[in-house]
Image 1 (tube, rainbow, N blue to C red):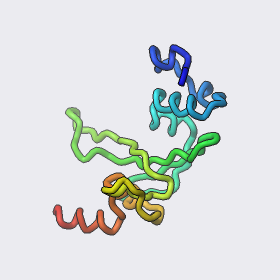
Image 2: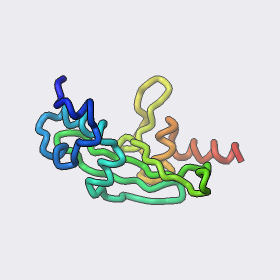
Image 3: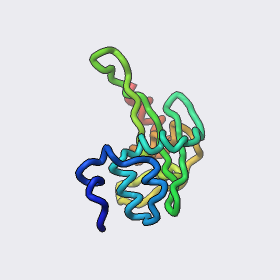
Length: 135
């Protein structure tokens, strides 16, 4: 696939407007990846779908593609200055966990816990048991 040279050489020059006006879905995926998924999510004015103590789930539609859904979590380890850095993790739009056999699990109810659990290949209930065992 061919992309304009700046996409490879100077990805910081990619603009949100450039992504939005790209008509080729494959090129648009590359642009979003190089732009940064979390940056694209924020710049797109994504909708917050839900929030709980585990994280906040955001969604934005992507033209001619599946929606971009991410969960915002806070790092549990403090930065050198004592602050806690937020991270965005991409999740399946239906919170389907990726299982050990590389198959997708069943869809889950929309919650921060289930979203985070899906990033570990678990369902929310399984993740809750795992956390209880760790404490």
